[in-house]
Picture 1 (cartoon, rainbow, N blue to C red):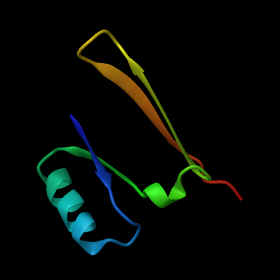
Picture 2: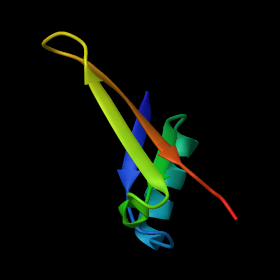
Picture 3: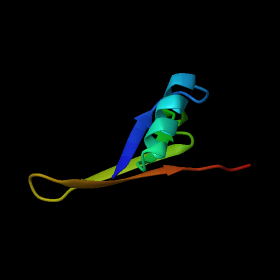
Length: 62
């Protein structure tokens, strides 16, 4: 399982929570929504009535 954390860059509380989760073997992805839509893109698709798949892309360019 992967946990998605929505937090600002430099959020010390979110960083401590992420470190604790990683220490317990959980994958963590931290996203700063202020990057949307200039650097961050999102897409999702419903798979029937009870599940979905999605993609987050963060672009680090020049």
